[in-house]
Amino acid sequence: MSTYDYDLFVIGGGSGGVRAARVAAGDAGARVALAEEDRYGGTCVIRGCVPKKLMVFASEFTDAAEVGKAYGWNMTSGTFDWHSFRDHLNTELDRLEGVYRSLLKNSGVDTFDARAKLKDAHTVELSNGETKTAKTILVATGGRPVRPDLPNADLGIVSDDIFHLETLPKSILIIGGGYIACEFACILHGLGVEVTQYYRGAQILRGFDDEARGLIAEAMRDRGIELHTGTNIVQMALDGQVYTSSGPTASDAALGASAQQQDLMSNDDTAPEASPGRGGPIWVKATNGRERVFDMVLFATGRNPNTDDMGFEELGIEVGRRGEVVVDAFSKTAVDSVYAIGDVTNRVNLTPVAIREGMAFVETVFKDNPTAVDHDLIPSAIFTQPEMGTVGMSEEAARDQEEIEVYCTSFRPMRTAFAGKPDRVLMKLVVSVATRKVLGCHIVAPNAGEMIQLAGIAIKMGATKEDFDRTVAVHPTMSEEIVTMKTPMRTA
Ligand code: NDP
Image (cartoon, rainbow, N blue to C red; front, side, top):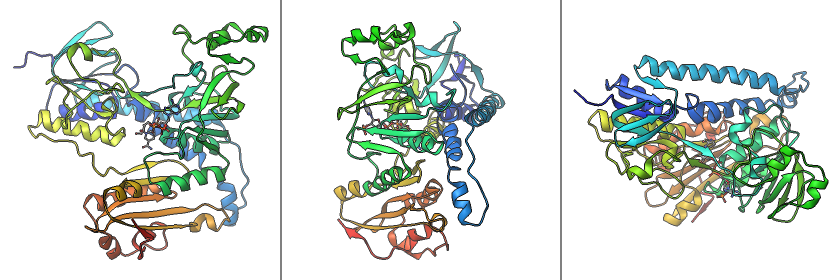
């Protein structure tokens, strides 16, 4: 009989933590507890993938009337009601949070609505004053968006704040060129916001296939998003108050800044936390010297693991340069009884990966079946407009590795071409000359996320280009092109 309160204590009720807890309790019969300081469901359900995808759907109705007309429908464009959508969204998120809570309850997991930190290798301390012991502790605390180290950065919002906005801004500046920046640029533009995006690098979506991200950047600009690459923010302040590195200039006082505004101007640690949309309009100076005013600034400048004040250092758990918990292939930390999964480990920060890591952890620790997590060939989607679905290596990464053939086609899809729209899609395969295996597949098209899931199975199985060729096309579809590209566009 164990001397611990539980076999497993999970810290964090996001996708990874909840899955590990309920499988350990339900399938493996372990005595399990879980602590969550905020809402159950974590980033994905409450402030990430799910509300984001619903916003993507909302934003895609913009040109419905225009396209519908081409198909003979007598339609007029309507207006978007943010409050109506947001209320509906909140109701849906409440429902989903309820589902997560009942999944835990029905699996027999004890839950604590409290913050938890490690006290020793087998003890967690809860913010309600209780301590609990467990044979194994699983850290699944996720990550959080970070603002750049810039005076007045708290005038800007981060992605968490978007779902709570009182009103949508008329104009927004988005900083960053990653998933979140590009997705929200498209979403907000679709909802009628004037979107400007500054990205410090030469091309958005660094690390993805060059041709695919080039097409997305072009499509974003064609739709009216003002995308500036090689550009970053260097200064920001409430409009009418010019900020200098030594603080607000004397003329700011003359301009009559309110007490609250003066607070926001200060860059000390006592400045109050920013709340969504507070303090605009915001004056911004860019690296190219250009000064502009926006109603809102969104920082989509990356996410850091939630490892602050968790008791890790004291216990000898190694934490990396970005604050990530360092783990081995089985998600074990430097302390034998403590494991970590999901974004807090900063491996591949995607919900299904955290879930896989949680399942592998349960196999390893509770089912006597040591299972390393397989992080190879993970398909993923970026919900820009058009969407990108991608799996495997980019052309650039593959050609550094070996000799390749590139099969590629770009065309106007039937649905929107009929309506006279300029939208283009891209289908691309990167193939190994030596093994004939498809090393990478990159699709930029409406619903590319749906397509890449299926292409991902074939590629994970090691399909060759000839396997793709042997597959009969589904006609008429966009994705049929993926099995009908006969001649390489180039070799490298
Ligand atoms: P990313 O790391 O993808 O992108 C961060 C962006 O901010 C990069 O363009 C980066 O530039 C830029 N940046 C970083 N620091 C600064 C700075 N100081 N000043 C200006 N720009 C800066 O992070 P995201 O926040 O977009 O997304 C976080 C993670 O969430 C992703 O890695 C992904 O795993 C996950 N996610 C997945 C989604 C999906 O699957 N569809 C959707 C949303 C998020 P640079 O490129 O030069 O470093």
